[in-house]
Length: 400
Image (spheres, rainbow, N blue to C red):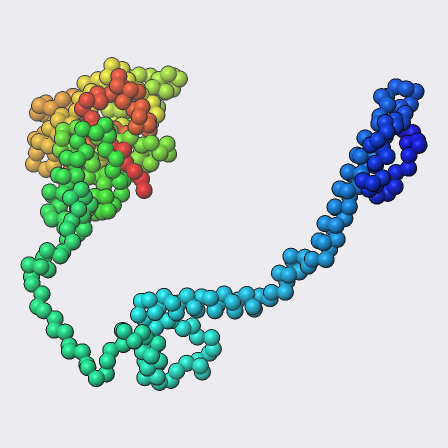
């Protein structure tokens, strides 16, 4: 770009130097080869003048900022000790103000060791009373008469006793408010009637079930109440680890129902062999007095039409009333199940199952329990055609 002609622009342009440009209309060619438009020399000079004013303003601001002390340097002048002392004095004044409003002496913090403490208790008392306001300080000439305490009325004392919340369930009260444990047990199970399943602790937890007897667990109490209602317990194990089956494995006869149809499907065992092994496990549980656990795991074998027979694995096995009728054949001196033929389970027995006396008696402790590892939300739909759910009570044990 070519330089201006016929005009001289100084470093600092004053308005007086622009007068001659305002009168005339001097124009200077600013284009090369007449491509760009011709600009007015007065307009260019005005723009340069405004720019020079802006630069001078920036210089003045920079000079003023250089003369002022920086903020960080001003902050460094305040040491940490001065800040702490100022804050401490302010806190002390606030404590004195609040203590005067309350009528008590301000609390002083000891800044020295043990030597700075007062050795005389009376000196500390006198100093504390001297800091009290005059209105709250007792007069020495007029001692206050002792206030006699009135005898407490037993009716008033009874009225001031805290009342028990009405919304609290009776089994959740304290030990002194529990009352009869049998009443608590009835109230606990009455509150769970009508539910799809019972969620109970698997172990002995007195915080949730304070009515438990000695060495009684929550799972045992739930199974006993299901038997009382005439239902076979269906234990829903949602942990996916087989916790419930592992609980009954060392103390009962566990029938792996999933393996029954898997072996039959793969050809490992025939249907007759599957039913024969199931009959042996059931008779062994009755003879030894152990729980007979039908473990469904996460499957739904068809016990209604496929895996049930009167002479090997009767469907009445899931009926609590039929199992409870074995009480007449349980224990010494009871009826002989083999000869009587009065019970449906008599068809299960074979001559090899009899005792040395030629009889068969059910031992104490026999019961039927069904376990499943399905979810509590889907077990009903999955097992509706597998087992008679109407004769069962779903229980969801909580391991911990």
